[in-house]
Length: 338
Ligand SMILES: [Fe+2]
Image: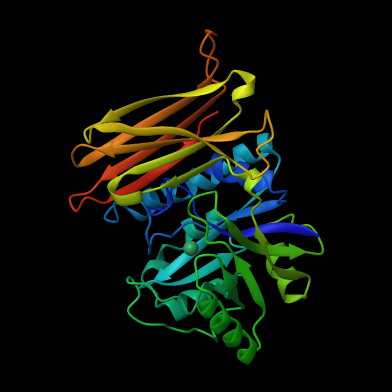
């Protein structure tokens, strides 16, 4: 079986994504995935660019993460495929099988109704999926279903509750639509991820739809083993908590530099076991908790090195945050840079 992520957002293109391309690819590579589809929010959704700019300029930005991922994919050894997530007031559709050039040739899609847009895409060979159809979130004012406009339904989505996924499964079942799954990953690391397992390898974008329609791609899920976690980020009570994997027995340790207008102060630093084994020489997490002293943006750069060596760091981890007016923290972006 060959395993693929079908629903992945990356920063900076998806405004809500917190992990960059390289970080995301490394995560899936470590888990033994064969490939990923980059499905960032399209120009009708939560894309991270000024929407008043010309269509082509926005598209250049839109495809940039995909091309960056293509470059990285060869170095990392994981396949990368192009996909799109369209949005209609928060009701989302995943589109596979149309290359970036197709979007450059069809600016009219921005003015079509979603029904017309999906029909056009399907007539041009796209494989279309209604993503997380029963999701209930504050940004969605109601559930909208498009059973006649899609080829399949995402019935397992890691961002949805079990109930929402069960409803999606029922929807697919009753309309006789094939079932697929995707993590809707916005942060590289997640404790549980979804995807498809295929009986044949995916070589091109159009293989995916063919395999699903032919019954050769199956819904799959995976609980990520704790040993695979490289970092854990959270925003407890107006603070930012960063846990980074380290192996002190090698002499390496993390050093950090915090900067930016929000004045980040280190509140605590401690070492916690990564796994229950607690074996001598086993990796640990070093946990840092920072508190902003005012609102605004800030950045913490962590470098992993042996303090006595005058060499470039073995790893660099960058976290960008924003301290909001209401005291909440928003983790904007993070990525390993090595
Ligand atoms: Fe998504």
